[in-house]
Image (cartoon, rainbow, N blue to C red; front, top):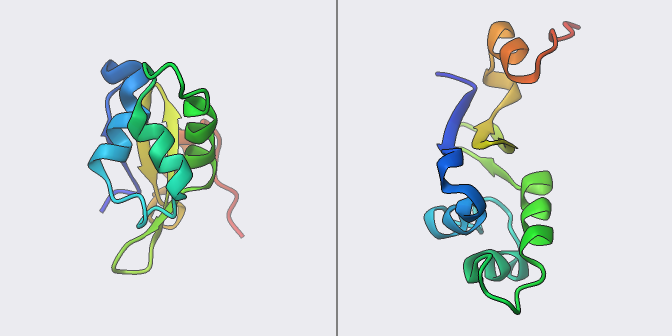
Amino acid sequence: MSGFEILMSDSRGVYIPQNFAESYHMDQWGVSDHDRDCLLSGPDYTENEFYWEAWENVVSNACYIDKNGNVWRLWQEGDLFSYCLELMTDEEYCNFFGIEREND
């Protein structure tokens, strides 16, 4: 099993946050109702001044715990990824973050 997976392609552009909120269970990612509602309203809704702030909150704080107890977090660099540090190989870690993993 890989320690990261792509969730959304960057081809979705400014709609990645909205599509993420539409496609995944926000409660399982620990996303607040307020942030979820801001994302679901989309970037085009003129009264949604909090869309990008909500997205920053989600990318910075959201985590999903799978059935095996692995913690998955979000990373966006163009594409949107989920990653689990414990499941990443050293090579995946280096490729993903651009640095070598420090081994204890």
